[in-house]
Length: 195
Image (cartoon, rainbow, N blue to C red; front, side, top):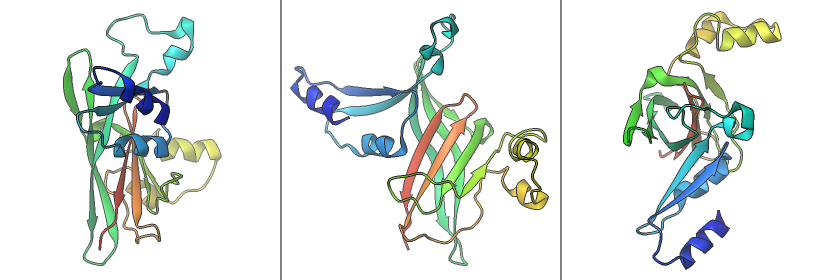
């Protein structure tokens, strides 16, 4: 990222947009891109479709997209009356290049989301993982069959929604929410807890 920014500073006329493309963004790299403040320049992240890796699997139709511009999830962080915290995921935004519009994806398009309740600004460690779109055969139920484990059925129901389980503030005072939408596109939001 630093090399790209250094090179962009030498360009004349100065760029208005810098686009970072990757098959997946490391949480720290995504955070670094989001935190750059360069007046007059917008930094964007685009997740590349993995079909680009294999020549014979590349999508042939023009309606299929090889790049998706990523936005941050629409997430609400709130402290409850009992002093615990909870997160609610409301959706996400992405840019649809075929229509040239910003599209809002709602809760119904979230395939999976995870919550790191004590994000250390280096590594994402999910403490809670949710599958809002999962039916009786998917999500945690599929994992249960795969690992042949006994899981608490009542607890599993709580991991199908878009509101986290209550949690205590961690020593880092920071949470991270990662969303995977119904197209497989990932996005990340990092938030500080404030008393």
